[in-house]
Amino acid sequence: MELRDLAVAIVTSQEARERDRLAIEAGTPSIELMRNAGKVAAQRIEHHFRNLLAAGVEIHTGSGNNGGDGWVVAGELARRGIPVRVVEAKPAQSGDAVTAREEALAVGLSEPPSRAAIVVDALLGTGSNGPPAGAVREAVNKIHRLRTEGAKVVSLDIPTGLDATSGECHDPVLADLTLSFGTLKRGHLTARGVCGAIEVLDIGLGKFGNSSQLDVRLADRDWVRERVPRIAADAHKGTRKRLAVLAGDVGMAGAAILAGKAALRSGIGLLHLIVARENRDAVHAAVPAALVSDHDELRSDPSSVLAGADALVVGPGLHRESADSILKALTDYRIPTVLDAGALTAMGSHRDILIRFCESREVVLTPHPGEMGRVMGLSTAGILDQRFEVGSELAARIRATVLLKGTPTVVSHYSRGRMVSATGTPALATGGSGDILSGMIGTLLAQTGSGFDSAVCAAWVHGRAAELCGSGRGITLDDILYAMPAAWKSAAVGVSTTVLASLPSVQ
Image 1: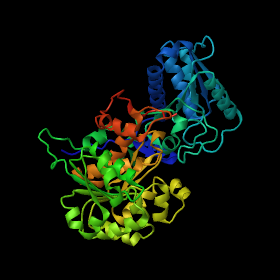
Image 2: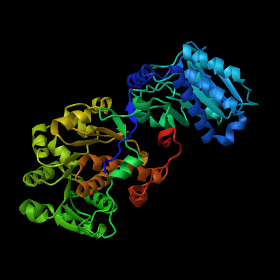
Image 3: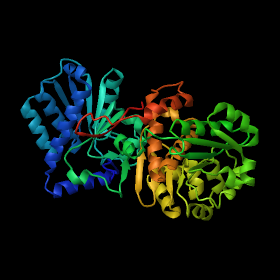
Image 4: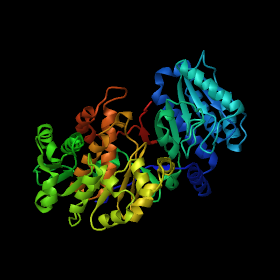
């Protein structure tokens, strides 16, 4: 059965405008798109804040189409008998915005009885960049004040002051909920703390709202669930496959332990941890379900140590010298491999060696931005500026899967395109989190043979486990590991046919 790929597209500001243009040229009037956007936004506001509606809604509008969206929201809420006040930072100027304003006023707006409990930011849309100025700046300042006084803030399409493409922030509106129209914008993902919860709404773009393999696409629960192999009722440890983790130099036993525990909590059948001789006892005690060998055994007789392995994880807790010698011992073994941490350091900028390693096996690289910079010859800042593109460049050169860690995590493949995992919380921003991710990817790689699917699915579940632990201080990697069984069981939640994707708040 062919798998579905209906992932939401992640776009730049220009790409968002182009999709609107194509839909309009294909016969959908621009005012209809605006009406659709305002209508579904009003529905979602009512859904999320039903208990606050009696106190009323205050909508701040600008002169362009984002302001027009706000006017449609005003009219839709008024039709439901909800008190609405519209505050025009600038009078409507675009033709559609003027029409939307007239239609809302024709409905008749009743003033909220006092200070509104919900504030809607409809000041500037995805086409804006740079700091808000003048009356719009004053409106943003007022929204800031209302939020500190307890009002809930909803931004339409993008919080004002946030660049939709780069994610650059100019003292932006801090939203509790951002309702994005048709597509997800890159800035939403690189500035999650500004957006609050995010929902992508269907506004009737039709086929022009769909993603293609050329787009950056968002991994969601349905995509992941369809690609994680089921464990059969008659499964045994052999059918659940065997993973070897080459990790844990002296003083770094924890990296091997975390990767191993993550593999077990991801459903591996047989786990073999290969660590420094000095770490054998510690690893045996911490992961009693694992077989344990040491690096010296691997170097002297790799065929015996790696016998039966369906996939390898190489690098967690390895110093450069150890990783280099281990990788040389693996030269003739065409086993699907995850390269992490020390293995990436050993490869460094030796791209020719990396290309040769990837020629005859399935490989997943899991660099953080600093490691990616060393491989690509760029600064960390340069990597972050190109986070959605740079992985594709490397994946094409080495013909492998590249998982670039960060907010968000971007997974690139030389033929299957780019996908983003936007799950997770700051609880993952701690040493050892990447070791857990490597164990998860290694398990799926052993069971599926697909580096791309394994990387995307593991990244999504890794982040989902963190979300299940809640927010705030005190969450440890042990908590993440304990949450993993529930994260693997996560099922899609169909909140509404008009909601294409939803991301929780990380504020």
